[in-house]
Length: 171
Image (cartoon, rainbow, N blue to C red):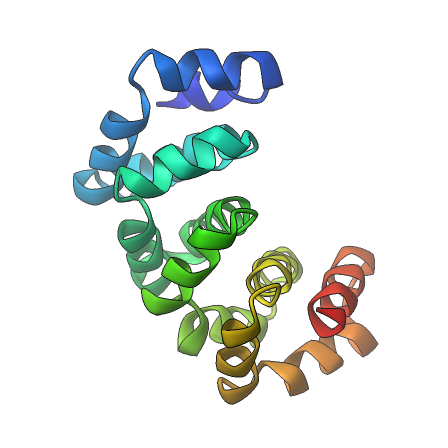
């Protein structure tokens, strides 16, 4: 999985890796692996999801629920990695709906905004900015209490966090 994560950083390799059948075993590792295996699988899927066709394939392979589970139960690194992967998948409008329905926003991404980890906050804000592109999701994000936390991040976050908070609030 680590090798696939590294190879999938190259845009040309992303389609090749997916066509070779790597998505389903990565989703399986995400479901059943140990903590480190789940994180590495999520990283590889996040890289693969930079390709729009792969975003659909990854969601169809069932990655959303185990990513939300990793966001719920993972350590700090696991949560950040899950948020990053969900953010990548949320570039697809159909995935935006399924990610919210799987419970990623309330309270999981909102809780990540409350942490002291700058990277975690930025990844949560990035995911929320992409999820907020859907009108129904906007309501869920507001109801989850994200607005106050995004404004706080806009005021006190690092440079990336501020940008991502502004994007989320703007969507």
